[in-house]
Length: 352
Image (tube, rainbow, N blue to C red; front, top):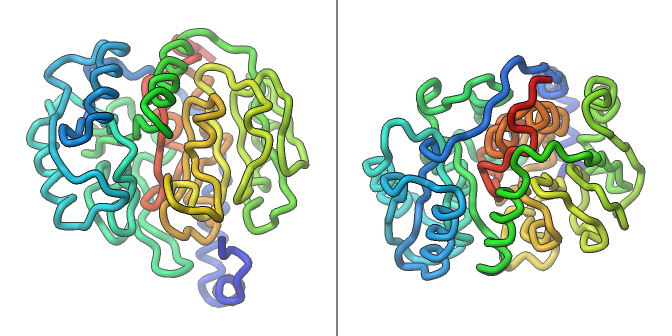
């Protein structure tokens, strides 16, 4: 994470500073939504890699659990690698697009690899198409998502994009368990807590600046605790957990309620395999979370490239499905990977 690099500090002090702080201020605003929704099975298309036996098994399991229509199962074939090149991905996305029913609004990617397309995450590349404006060149901003904090309940119909999320895990059993937690969460109205963690890692603690306003606006809806610690431990009611660390300790000591959303702001949390320096988001899922998010390329700790805690909490507790609330919380998602059970809706039917 290079938030505190000399170059970055120089850029912020330079003529770019007014733009940066304007963007940061805009990100910090929490706009209360007026709609609530839950994604329906016919709105989800599941993409399966027929060359990957694990993908085939996960897609079949998810279709069964969520009663996804047969017409919404999209079968393609490509190599199982960590990253795809641009040409191969363009062929893949074209094949997917041609098979997708017009009414589908979201994609569930039934695999764990690949997770990146050159400089974009696979979920953002599938959503927007490969576009370098969504990639960072050193410490720079990227293209803004039109879906950010949107009240749209049909992003393809309204915006011509289908937000994507990965049905992924460290193994098939963990992925199935994550899916089960999402299904179990529906309409449960859990009495959980949102933990907003302020760490000693200054470069990765940049989201803490909005914690006070989030608490002020949303504490009448859900219990919120702002805690200064590097590792939350032995909590029995975790529904949200937002922090900033390269490695988060004691994950397994907490109990994550079905539907829990958790993530850590760091450089390469979305690098699912092979990064020994920073924690993969898969560790959150192994510990019992239902969704997480991380970047696949160096983001330089722009908070706009990570989920806004207030937007996630506000929309999720208002009744939106996980894929809606999580995707709408990221202003610049090009480098960010979404992993989780998209239809999870613990507060479905809420009329807050």
